[in-house]
Amino acid sequence: MPLVSMRQLLDHAAENGYGLAAFNVNNMEQIQAIMEAAVETESPVIVQASRGARQYANENFLRHLILAAVELYPQIPLAMHQDHGNSPATCISAIENGFTSVMMDGSLDEAGKNISTLEYNVKVTQEVVKYAHARGVTVEGELGALGGIEDGHGAGLSAEEAAEHLTDPDQAVEFVEATGVDALAVAIGTSHGAYKFTRKPTGDVLVMSRIEEINKRLPNTHLVMHGSSSVPRELVKIIDDHGGNIGETYGVPVEEIQRGIAHGVRKVNIDTDNRLAMTGAIRKAFHENPKEFDPRKYLGPAREAMKKVCVSRMTAFGQAGNAGKIEPKSLKQMKKFYAS
Ligand code: G3H
Ligand code: 13P
Ligand code: ZN
Figure 1 (cartoon, protein in one colour):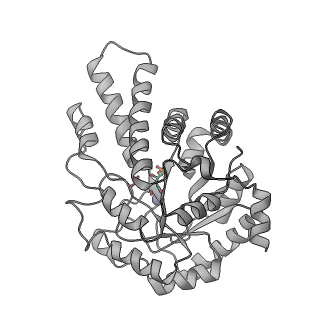
Figure 2: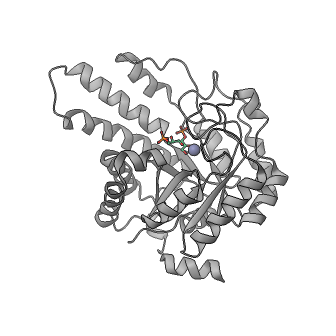
């Protein structure tokens, strides 16, 4: 099966009432972990690469690793997505490098640090939609601002500031109509990374009700939750028990994500949980076998630990069992779909 467009996967998820985890990748072990989990659970897959991932792994390595996954697992529909594209140029270069889906994150300026204006966001997103849809490629836009770290994907907003920049449902309708995006990332109080909440989140900080409001106004738009790692205590404990210091912190509970899925969320972005799982496994291997120096002896367990997280999320979000039910459409077919 060739790479498929993300729109096709999101449409299938919407028609059948499930959500898709979108896992970030930077290297071979992470791609293998996702694919092994997908095979075990018969799940369609979204792999996504940030700009940092594209730089770290190198464009050609990344593309060929993903193409190797396609070749090895023809039964798994797989979309390759640019995460947090910061400009039309980034999205265009992703498409030129084989990505079948791009995110134009115009919620921030090009440096990814300051909140942009709605006019700027609409303009850059429209530009990307025009270019991408003419090639059958999917576009995700973002409206509102995530909280937390100033990491090139966030303006470093405090929880209070982030609460002032949740996605406005009226503006969401205006944005989707003006841009024609396939999917909309919404700000509901989450942030990237491990330090999202200082206690188990309640509705005042993790505003799931906002998703319900947006979904009512935009029932046919696929919603995306960023910053959706759950930061499981057991993964943090493995790190902290083996010389790490993550400490007490809380993520987005899986049951809240499931509530989102019941209200139009079709794509759920997860990176941190996999990073935690891999780091814990590596720390444990180093701690338990201080004389070992074969990278396979710690990267292997790291891959296995990430696979477990992927299996768990694929099952919880309902994407498991759907791989074989999707008849792949080519980008050429998707191009015609957008033109019609
Ligand atoms: O959006 C954030 C993802 O976790 C990717 O992070 O830019 O460090 O690769 P990154
Ligand atoms: P986490 O840091 O919660 O895994 O979020 C990842 C993300 O949103 C990638 O775009
Ligand atoms: Zn994100």
